[in-house]
Image 1 (tube, helix red, strand yellow):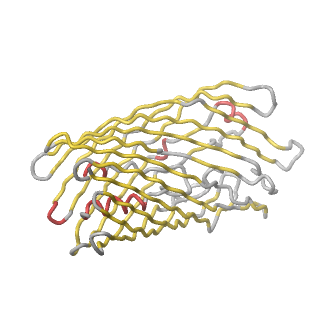
Image 2 (spheres, one colour; image 1 turned 180 degrees about the vertical axis):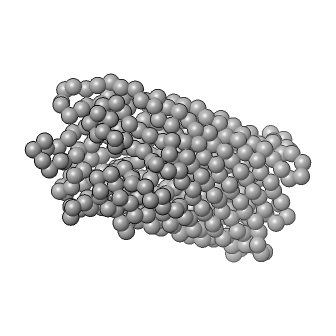
Length: 365
């Protein structure tokens, strides 16, 4: 197994569940473009977050549901200087479920966000080990939310429901890479465009039976990723990434919701975010290799929404790859320490965490 293959598999494990406590569930890596020959992969991930907070002595219980991720990839050369790849993944998602048996302002609140994306990429090799690549991405998004807000006053519980259609949007990918195969070195800089969606939703306001149809826009934000790797000793590889996402452009705030919860969007972020990942891989034999990865996303200090009450994270992961002939199986586990956050109802979420596991089955043919 070559060093590039080892890095691709183990860095992918480091991304399992992305932050494992927020809505990003794919880092949209283009590493598949640099695999040798014809190549296919299947990735499975499962994240188990534990996110709890309190306000005024009232405990929320764990409001973050477990979730699974799935992706497929296929890459094929079109000649000595050109490659194509197809990637299917789930860029964003959410599974929120505040326990209903708690005395807490949002007890019983639930929300789901689902997405799917298909990305087609083309890479062309230039001289001096430089290549350029780009492609198109088609993406679908839909969501539901049931917000129960107990005012602990004579006005009682505010009950709001939202269910959207599935909307489709399109974006593009552009990138440039440099490689030095003798030392397994590679640097790839990738731009992913924003994708705009117009969602049609049915909102049920405070008074039952008065449903309202509304259209609202949301944007899955643009991002820039720098992925790198290099051999540092025989059978030893240093690899990592830096990823910036313009999350300040992501907003879900339907019309009726705006009237019920004035000035507090359903989902929104005040700041952009940058995530840093670094890993070290080691080949132990022709069949076995392993790696350790660490990731860090600084806290912004902003107040957060009630559907994603964490601010930044730190994580560490370990993984191993078994190679037999043309097949590689990679498995690993990642521990995520979620950053403390204060929500817009003054709830404090501290000492929260997540565990994510992942597996990749890859085949060269």
